[in-house]
Image (tube, rainbow, N blue to C red; front, side, top):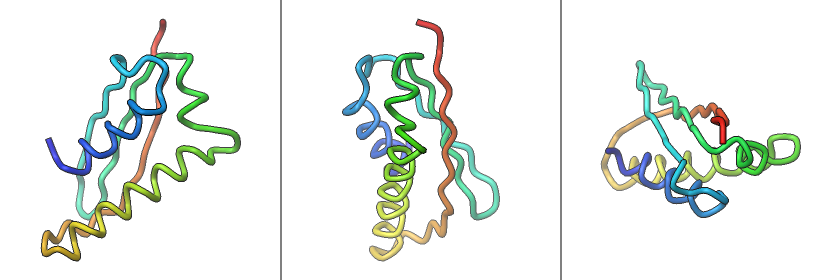
Length: 89
């Protein structure tokens, strides 16, 4: 599991009402990393936020984390994208 995936999972579990149902999958291609987020259906709106503000902020924090790794010598060069799906509860 990547450090970025662990970081993202920690953030999501912190804002979720059902943290045990948070699942983050990581897919890489070229210089892009896609994080597919599964959560309880009631948490989907909480994670996305009004107008996508929450998921946008999470994406910015995750990208900052990726950049921090880069500055410390780990050249990931990743562009971070996220997708959220609510599962049946």
